[in-house]
Length: 243
Image 1 (cartoon, rainbow, N blue to C red):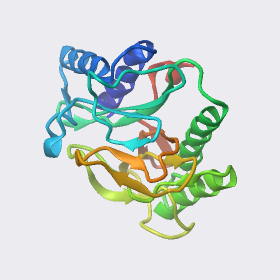
Image 2: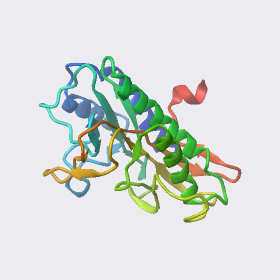
Image 3: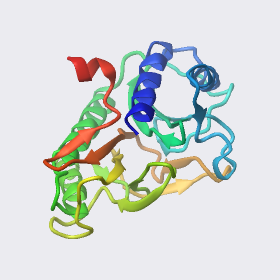
Image 4: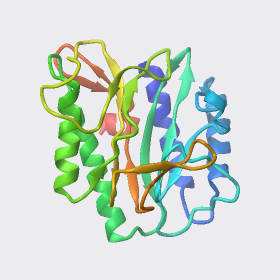
């Protein structure tokens, strides 16, 4: 899992310089697929329940599962989430992060910063004996205090040699409730935070989820492992690991 997750982190770092105005999301997808194959891995999203591309690119009001396309060209002021899951030696490394395209609006900048902080507050809750509800509560408390809402329709999930496994990890909740965490558990935490309502709609393509009010949304995702004395972030980028 460590190797697969580090590969995922490296893939996001590789794509980062390409995220700029005038670049299509299909170009990002094709470079991700090329790089993944060159590193001896496969792209888990490609063909997963019929998903047609190798990564997810979710721009502005797209909550998750955005499908890359040649027609979708990044422009100044956009915010975009890139979600990658390479499979290496049968293990899935799952991570995503937000990118600014050019100069973001003040609201977009605050949303992205709050969403990343939500993720880290949630990660700090993880330790043996804690509960799944502690994770969601930490996210919900901070996001709502900042004036944003937390998506209910999509959750974090167990991941290992299976893409989506137990446990489910909601990003809202009540402290002290839910499954107890124990060493060896590996799962994603991936809060999706909205400017307006938490409600979402799925478009006619059957994949692209958007905010019901078409306001901005942001997401960050790490795969983490519960250790004997706390938590290990498996998808932390190499630059941050060595910093």
